[in-house]
Image (cartoon, rainbow, N blue to C red; front, side, top):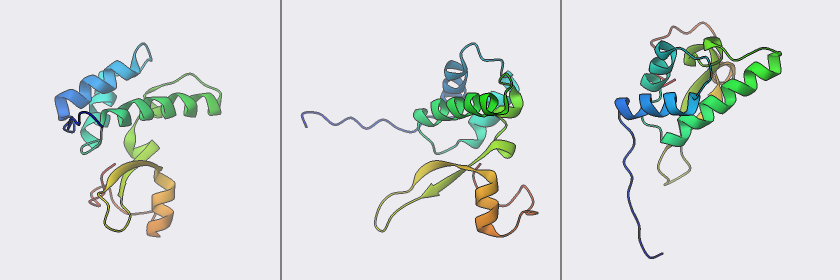
Length: 116
């Protein structure tokens, strides 16, 4: 390796711009993209791209056009931070129902401390 450059995680303004850029011409509202950016704290820019990709795939799987409902983090995905032994944590997109099943508490309130 000739050069290593550390790129810090994006702050809220940068995440908001990343979500808007990756949403492109998709019909997602600024409000929903801003909420997604807030809930994606601690993630890299590639997370925004992946969430937009999964939102479009979700719409296609249900046979509809993409809408805000496909992006709303509390309904679509959770961000789980996982790590192996001795490794730093990294964010992973996990369907909310999977984390709820793992938690064993589907009725847990929204202020459960998990990043989503």
